[in-house]
Length: 318
Ligand code: A2P
Image (cartoon, rainbow, N blue to C red; front, side, top):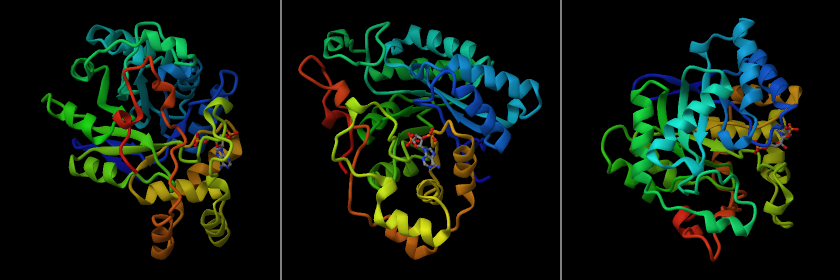
């Protein structure tokens, strides 16, 4: 399995298992199946509300000798209500307890958006009253501290644009080592990818399959579907693989880690096998030339009249 190198030589396996939207009751088996199939990278977050069950699967896999801790790469993310410096440690300690681990391989600031303590996902506009402004620098210093204390080997961010990354680099000390953002052929994020590469950062693509299982309220009825894209379908036919495998291979060919979510054993296996697809140069070029541009996770849930955030602060232009 191909992997990518951090600046100190540590490796992150390029394909990982995503666990956003994986329900307790499903995610234990999904993580165990993935580890048995050969996955060594699991992507988690406190807000996914399933880390206790992911932790049981990790514990059983480690105890059963399916994988050893040093070969496993586990990522988790600090939720928006824990951006104060003193809350960062509380956040990582809760995640470590739930995952039954002594350390994480990678800890990310989940969003450049901060909430008051105790606020979960902003599902109702009323919750916009509960935003609190904590400077990103404060949160980043908390993250640096966690790395120094050995609670995580690497630190990074998620959903950060170039402007916000620059703010973190200006602080000094360890800069963000990885940025996890939505990426697929409809959202290639070339400007952000080039910026991260220039800074020596790695990247991870979330929602590589378009996250069709996310809640209906966050979907537009006319949104484009990656699984129905003509080019993706014709390449699936040509390489005798599934459309999902084409989408995963696209990220692998860009040297960008990718974390397809599945709770189905067959699809979990299939997704890992996408790592061995070799595209002809012309086919990869064609995927990079798709003109449809679409952001599935558009962040409008963080905006509104009661919020200090707006979409142009959050995102890079296409
Ligand atoms: P399931 O969990 O039942 O396999 P994303 O990673 O972009 O969030 O997308 C996850 C969605 O894609 C889920 O609905 C998941 O369903 C589905 N999915 C995952 N792998 C495949 C695959 N190989 N083929 C088709 N659908 C897939």
